Length: 250
Image (cartoon, rainbow, N blue to C red; front, side, top):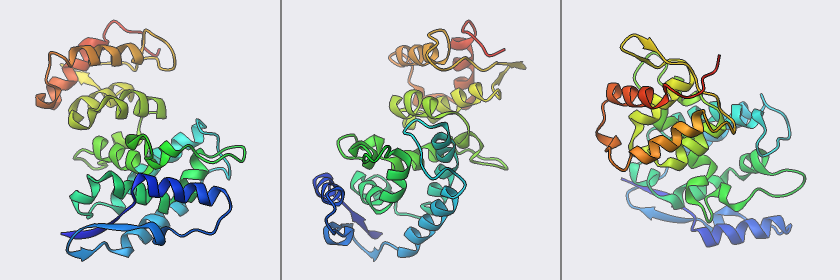
């Protein structure tokens, strides 16, 4: 068991407001602790900071919120976050206040990724007001959902654009139905094969006859099918059947 750091939403909100107003504030002054046992290892934070800082250097100094470069950063950063936190107490990983602490601790990354034109990032990227939008939490969950056994366990986690992940996977609560999430990822990376029949990628963007339509079909059928009980093969077959008549990438 571990005693781990947390930040409550209101405390984090006041801290960020004071920071944006130019006041001298410190995270340690508002940080609290949850759990019991040994203290959360500071080496974990240092490892994560080193990994994200090195990765950030590969990308532009400034980004727009929906900049494709930001999406590419997230595809790599999710692996860095997951590997850095692989030994963290599962109770901490299930505590949204822990993730709010991490996001504020890594505010430089959050602001670089989502702040633009001199304006601060929206609070939801810190998990304030919208817990699941927390950048650090999203990155960890993306890697955890996409990870599977193999020579490169994070291959699927790195694949897919930011719209696929945020709109059709993370916001659809597929964390408890990861086999379906992985099937959708296999479809969109050209790796889905059912009974020796390969499936082609669907068109993305705003096309109503592509991946968005598939996502709507999955939401409707979930009312009658318990996704959590599907095997990997059953999930692949389901996604394949629901996508066969949709517009594919040539």
